[in-house]
Length: 144
Image 1 (tube, rainbow, N blue to C red):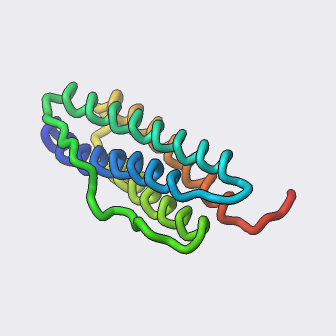
Image 2: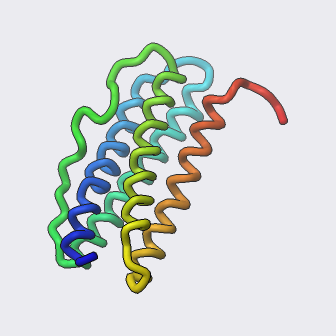
């Protein structure tokens, strides 16, 4: 896979990382009730992490000689919802989409592109953590 082809695959990931950062920030504005403080904190930390991921992807694109497209994926997440669970399900959908984009690119890379493979594996590890955390938050309230 050429650097140009890799950049073509990274730009949609960049758009989704930017959309994710905006989504988490947007959702943080709409939390009310007893759990507001920890949930808002978590959502805003996810927004910051999304910007970090977007920055890493953009830097990777330029390192490969490409041009990052810094327009987030518009319409990627619902802006109205009836419950926190509905909001979290929307975040889970986007997290899984980003995970699949990273995973597909990793599967398509040749073995000799070790640096890119390691980078993608690191990003996949972080995305798995996000997915698992959201899935736990959506699980019924129980103590294990």
